Image 1 (cartoon, rainbow, N blue to C red):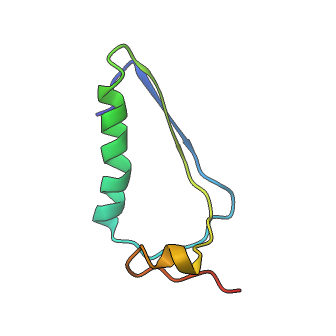
Image 2 (image 1 turned 135 degrees about the horizontal axis):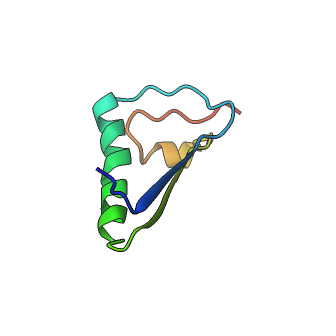
Amino acid sequence: MIGEDINLMFRPAPRLGRVAVDPGQLEQVIVNPVVNARDAMPNGGQISLETANVEVSEDSALWHVGAVPAPT
């Protein structure tokens, strides 16, 4: 799927929290940008994926269905 001339790097953050997520949607969140990046690099290159823990503020939670703000 990625290609021989493309190096895929994955850097998970330590001690990641748990999330409730639809597996199919998570797959699309990962696959779509990777495929777009691959298509933009016909001569190869590197794609890096990183994860991080983030706190969702009250204002930010309003824009994301089902998101719950971090406790204060």
